[in-house]
Image (cartoon, rainbow, N blue to C red):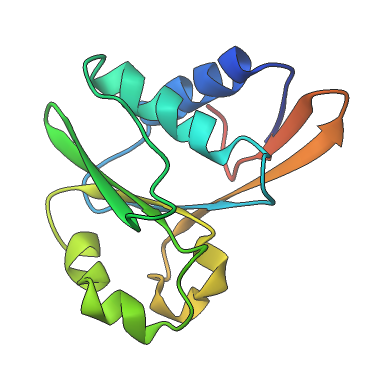
Length: 139
């Protein structure tokens, strides 16, 4: 399924619809260039599950944790990671094997650490402020 969004609000709305599909143990990879809407999509997911949480890009912290009722979301950004071994140091595999779901921006930088069942969502800028979001299933 390919969605085209024309605003930040529409990208967040797509994230909110996707949130209904998330379960504990899921690993969701967001792939796409800078400014393609990955973090806004995550904001939509988190805000739909817990309106009191403020979503910040994990570019410098590497991972942010968001309590969302019955599930915890772990929001990663691999952009500043230089080697897969750095993910071992922060306990990435433990996050993937616990009670929450992992959402990873730039996750395809280290495909070797991803579980085989990871869901990959591709983002691209199609010009004129529009973004394309390619999902593996309908939302």
